Length: 166
Image (tube, rainbow, N blue to C red; front, side, top):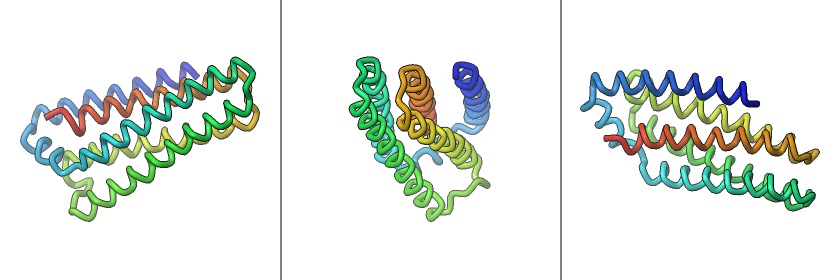
């Protein structure tokens, strides 16, 4: 799991660096694109993912205590938050596309790729949570939670550079 996580962090780190170089070359263009994003949806998505991470961390504590039912409920709650994140991201993409923002726009090409690759990781995280919830054991739950925390970490950076950094 650590190899996978470190590989993902390296991949995203390279993309974050590329984004920053392009942003430095066209700050006005990127600032204009950022103003088109739905900040409120980004904030809600951040809270939703952090809440999911809390549930995943609590699931680890519960499985260590041997509380299988509580562990499953917490993993289900984390997964529910992940699904809500995906729904909100779909709404946000629909809004951006309806406003005419496509990958032809430099800022939005970064936006769609960063958030799209992140969403793919989130969907994989949902699959992992589902698998480990079926047969709860300490090590798989810890690894699944670790992967989920990486998804949150990546989102915090994505949120900061896409929505907040002006």
